[in-house]
Image (tube, rainbow, N blue to C red; front, top):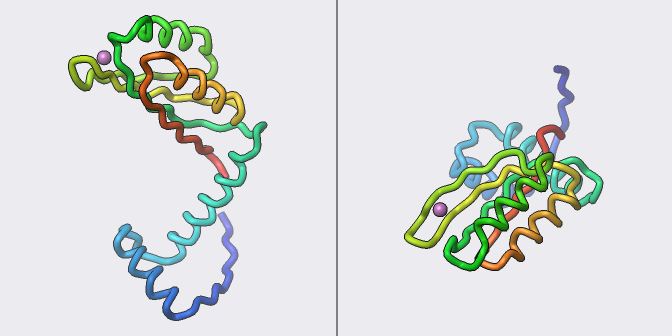
Length: 135
Ligand code: NI
Protein backbone atom coordinates (compact mmCIF):
# COMPACT_ATOMS: atom_id res chain seq x y z
CA UNK A 1 0.00 0.00 0.00
CA UNK A 2 1.37 3.41 -0.93
CA UNK A 3 1.04 6.27 1.51
CA UNK A 4 1.09 10.01 1.11
CA UNK A 5 2.63 12.21 3.70
CA UNK A 6 0.77 15.32 4.83
CA UNK A 7 1.85 18.03 7.21
CA UNK A 8 -0.51 19.05 10.01
CA UNK A 9 0.00 22.25 12.00
CA UNK A 10 -0.99 22.38 15.65
CA UNK A 11 -0.98 25.10 18.26
CA UNK A 12 1.49 23.94 20.96
CA UNK A 13 -1.21 23.74 23.69
CA UNK A 14 -3.45 21.63 21.47
CA UNK A 15 -0.60 19.31 20.51
CA UNK A 16 0.35 18.87 24.15
CA UNK A 17 -3.22 17.88 25.06
CA UNK A 18 -3.41 15.58 22.06
CA UNK A 19 -0.15 13.86 23.02
CA UNK A 20 -1.41 13.33 26.59
CA UNK A 21 -4.61 11.83 25.22
CA UNK A 22 -2.66 9.51 22.91
CA UNK A 23 -0.46 8.38 25.76
CA UNK A 24 -3.48 7.59 27.94
CA UNK A 25 -5.04 5.62 25.08
CA UNK A 26 -1.87 3.66 24.41
CA UNK A 27 -0.91 5.09 21.03
CA UNK A 28 2.79 5.01 20.31
CA UNK A 29 2.72 7.36 17.34
CA UNK A 30 0.67 10.34 16.25
CA UNK A 31 0.16 9.16 12.67
CA UNK A 32 -1.77 6.05 13.69
CA UNK A 33 -3.91 8.10 16.09
CA UNK A 34 -4.69 10.70 13.43
CA UNK A 35 -5.53 7.98 10.87
CA UNK A 36 -7.93 6.38 13.39
CA UNK A 37 -9.62 9.74 14.00
CA UNK A 38 -9.98 10.29 10.25
CA UNK A 39 -11.48 6.80 9.76
CA UNK A 40 -13.90 7.42 12.64
CA UNK A 41 -15.04 10.73 11.10
CA UNK A 42 -15.52 9.14 7.67
CA UNK A 43 -17.52 6.22 9.10
CA UNK A 44 -19.68 8.59 11.17
CA UNK A 45 -20.48 10.60 8.06
CA UNK A 46 -21.16 7.47 5.96
CA UNK A 47 -23.51 5.82 8.42
CA UNK A 48 -25.62 8.99 8.47
CA UNK A 49 -26.65 7.96 4.96
CA UNK A 50 -29.78 5.83 5.07
CA UNK A 51 -28.70 3.67 2.12
CA UNK A 52 -25.23 2.86 3.43
CA UNK A 53 -24.52 -0.84 4.14
CA UNK A 54 -23.52 -1.13 7.79
CA UNK A 55 -22.77 -3.75 10.41
CA UNK A 56 -23.13 -3.44 14.14
CA UNK A 57 -24.55 -4.64 17.42
CA UNK A 58 -27.75 -4.06 19.32
CA UNK A 59 -27.32 -4.74 23.03
CA UNK A 60 -30.59 -5.13 24.89
CA UNK A 61 -31.58 -5.71 28.49
CA UNK A 62 -34.95 -7.31 29.06
CA UNK A 63 -37.03 -8.94 31.75
CA UNK A 64 -37.93 -12.41 30.53
CA UNK A 65 -40.89 -12.60 32.94
CA UNK A 66 -42.72 -9.67 31.36
CA UNK A 67 -45.56 -10.81 29.13
CA UNK A 68 -44.55 -12.57 25.96
CA UNK A 69 -41.20 -10.83 25.49
CA UNK A 70 -39.08 -13.96 24.96
CA UNK A 71 -41.41 -15.32 22.28
CA UNK A 72 -41.68 -11.95 20.59
CA UNK A 73 -37.92 -11.55 20.45
CA UNK A 74 -37.49 -15.05 19.04
CA UNK A 75 -40.21 -14.47 16.47
CA UNK A 76 -38.77 -11.13 15.43
CA UNK A 77 -35.28 -12.61 15.01
CA UNK A 78 -36.54 -15.50 12.89
CA UNK A 79 -38.43 -13.00 10.75
CA UNK A 80 -35.26 -10.95 10.08
CA UNK A 81 -32.80 -13.73 9.21
CA UNK A 82 -30.73 -11.70 6.77
CA UNK A 83 -30.40 -8.69 9.06
CA UNK A 84 -29.86 -10.36 12.46
CA UNK A 85 -26.90 -12.63 11.80
CA UNK A 86 -25.89 -13.71 15.31
CA UNK A 87 -27.05 -13.42 18.91
CA UNK A 88 -25.55 -14.03 22.33
CA UNK A 89 -27.70 -14.40 25.41
CA UNK A 90 -26.52 -13.91 28.98
CA UNK A 91 -28.73 -14.55 32.03
CA UNK A 92 -27.70 -11.56 34.14
CA UNK A 93 -29.91 -11.82 37.21
CA UNK A 94 -32.99 -13.76 38.32
CA UNK A 95 -35.22 -11.91 35.86
CA UNK A 96 -32.85 -9.85 33.71
CA UNK A 97 -31.39 -11.02 30.43
CA UNK A 98 -28.81 -9.38 28.22
CA UNK A 99 -28.75 -10.11 24.53
CA UNK A 100 -26.29 -8.90 21.92
CA UNK A 101 -27.60 -9.05 18.37
CA UNK A 102 -25.16 -8.69 15.49
CA UNK A 103 -27.00 -6.78 12.79
CA UNK A 104 -26.23 -5.84 9.21
CA UNK A 105 -27.99 -4.18 6.29
CA UNK A 106 -28.88 -0.69 5.13
CA UNK A 107 -28.42 1.89 7.86
CA UNK A 108 -32.09 2.89 7.89
CA UNK A 109 -33.29 -0.75 8.05
CA UNK A 110 -30.93 -1.50 10.93
CA UNK A 111 -32.12 1.59 12.84
CA UNK A 112 -35.79 0.68 12.30
CA UNK A 113 -35.13 -2.88 13.39
CA UNK A 114 -33.50 -1.61 16.59
CA UNK A 115 -36.47 0.72 17.23
CA UNK A 116 -38.91 -2.19 16.87
CA UNK A 117 -36.97 -4.37 19.28
CA UNK A 118 -36.69 -1.55 21.86
CA UNK A 119 -40.47 -1.04 21.61
CA UNK A 120 -41.26 -4.64 22.61
CA UNK A 121 -42.80 -4.68 26.08
CA UNK A 122 -40.26 -6.05 28.56
CA UNK A 123 -37.23 -4.69 26.69
CA UNK A 124 -35.92 -2.09 29.12
CA UNK A 125 -32.98 -0.70 27.22
CA UNK A 126 -31.32 -1.06 23.84
CA UNK A 127 -28.07 0.42 22.58
CA UNK A 128 -27.30 0.29 18.86
CA UNK A 129 -23.73 0.64 17.65
CA UNK A 130 -23.23 0.69 13.90
CA UNK A 131 -20.05 0.84 11.93
CA UNK A 132 -18.47 -0.33 8.67
CA UNK A 133 -15.79 -2.90 7.97
CA UNK A 134 -14.12 -0.72 5.35
CA UNK A 135 -13.60 3.01 4.94
NI1 NI B 1 -31.85 -15.07 30.19
